[in-house]
Length: 138
Image (tube, rainbow, N blue to C red; front, side, top):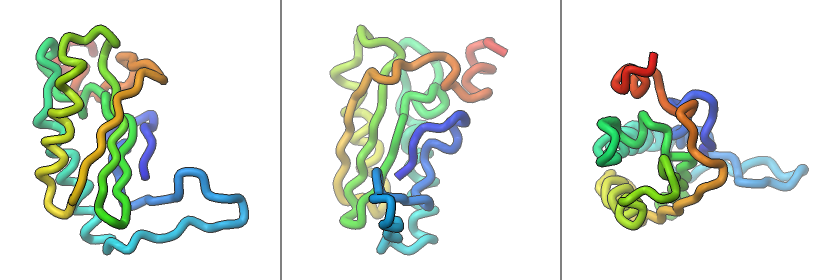
């Protein structure tokens, strides 16, 4: 599992898979998916997320920082937690399906579940430098 960090580039890294809330005396179980395959799936998921755009902003959702968490279970179910730039986004009902469809195309992913959240709220601080440059915000 990977949580959103200060650097949006770190938000999808399936190679570090601690349990969501492991017991204090229980170490995280390693994935049954080989490390090399996790690295490939991670790269492919990033590329898949870069194909999804907020239609009102000419930047993909990965660079915008709309993906908060990605987790790949051993049964190859991918859980994606995402947000929108604003709760009233006109594509709020459609964008999670676009994310689902993009992630479902990744080889090695059997099932995708997308959860749309608004806490914590999205802020421009979550954007990568590439997004800021594209939006003339540097």
